[in-house]
Length: 513
Image: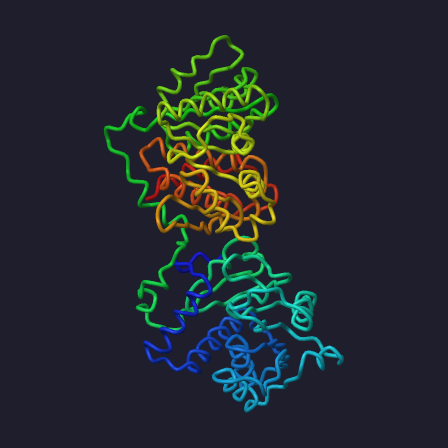
């Protein structure tokens, strides 16, 4: 993903308001803005596909279709072979879109309806321009429109999407039935939040933003155009990670206590504990099954280990020394797990110790494994993936993914604290009115492997133990985690990435120059 993207992320209706401000408040002509959009997209097309000599331009109605007609006109003017395929009779176009059609017609760009296109044999084209639907789409495409999307996806041609891949919901990143899968998307005026989460990254390919030279003050108008979502990345974290004071000692950098690692699941708690160390915690202790002690100490002798089969375990004393508690990695769902979960909830209630709740602890929370426990806390971080979120919200994974922003907001409303919904474009919702969202644009598909969430929970706790707030710890950790994975795949590729390979990069990233 292109990381040189705006921080402010908008809903579609907010982007339309930004368009209105550009047109009405700043006096920019609508056709002029359309020409800028078409020219910006065509310029990127030329950069990406320098040898392309022929292109298909699929256009709908409205401004998105108008952008497509401008692209066709520019391509025809340069002598490229252009075939416009329209889904709406150009005679029904109005305003700037009609002027753009006239511009393409004056440049002798060939045009035909989609029905005619389907009935004829065509030579090979070099690429496709998708200008069917804009950001206003809120229902599934049907009939010829759906057939056009399916034709584009089945063509095996590279695709440039104009503003947004057709069929993708601009606010949620969910395909509305079917969506174009582009190799490059050029989006304008305001960054649509759905482009960066759920299936947005799958559909956009490389994502480029162009503000069309609209003055920056339209983005600071406030009110209805105030961004509810902020994009964060590794560059966002430097402010949270100051240089250590010369007199710092292990006690001043916090003590992380981690609980988990039932029979056969020791690796999860080991990786979480090491991640807490690598992110800078001064002390790290683990409560786990005694059978895991040899492996843990062989891997990281710096970690203190208490085995639950070693006789009486003084959990209250361990809780008293902890700055932050992590519970969940490899925890399991049996009686042993439930007893630890109950003890941690009691400690949180009586001592106010901040918690990072992950993995199986989230399942126990969803099952109300401690029936009388308070399920809403300001002092915890919840880190579910979509399956765990669905269990917590008593719904389906499909419903969670249909609107990830709504899902993470509901998690925060029900359970309090800071909530993370993991996945492509991980989302963070923190307390406050109005609710604040962060979207992390770091990370890659190689992270879809066992243990990644365990590492993340350790980073969150390690940062919080050093004095960061829960919200800042979560935001910083998600970015460090994703960027560490990006660095880890740089030379070796995404397939085969394992969670423990992130450790050296975590240490590097929590020490910004």
